[in-house]
Length: 262
Image (cartoon, rainbow, N blue to C red; front, side, top):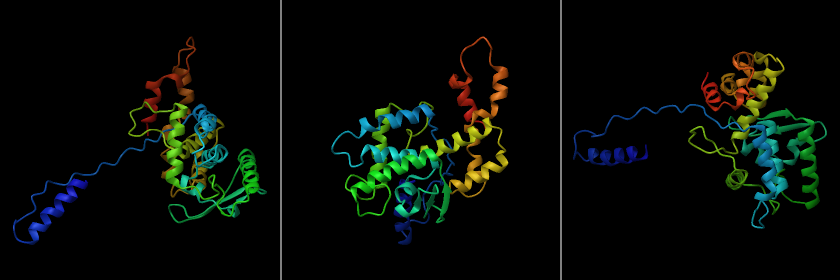
């Protein structure tokens, strides 16, 4: 695409001066829409990430301490927030008494206030107690070792190192390795999977999930349905041989097929 624009500008220059009669440019290729293919972390992989935080951040040159990195990872996975949304949180945005978080300035320039569970509240309370003991001047909730706001590029580089330390990589032919952003997708898929297990009405829950994640429209959450093979549990149990001790989740080919269903 960049080469195409450069050539077009080059020939436009000579066309404007009458040196050529027409643009000798090939027909512009139609841009293909890439399929939605996030990496969905398993719960065991998320535990591995959290367990490896201390090893990843043990070097004195690391600007983000292990407690802060762990709290941010848990926050994103527990709320489905964007990385930037988590880093922009201010102290006044988190109500640790009532259990609410206000997320401002998202990608659609909207704000939302979401409830959080007791486990996440305990994590944030412990982190805030440590942060208050340092008496920082910055109003951001998550801070680096210098008591300043964390830059997105910095934490994404840190997460890439954490992923390698954890030994997590994708083998499904994806164009990129698991990202910090994919914790948001894992939150959505795991939440939908839990609802399906408990027989919840997805017609009611998916719109609520869309609002909770700050998305627009029902289709933004419907895209996660192909990544929730729990919807086929009854059929898969009937098809699975009873003598085998292997579970259908262990069949990589089957899981790959299910992920392609719409």
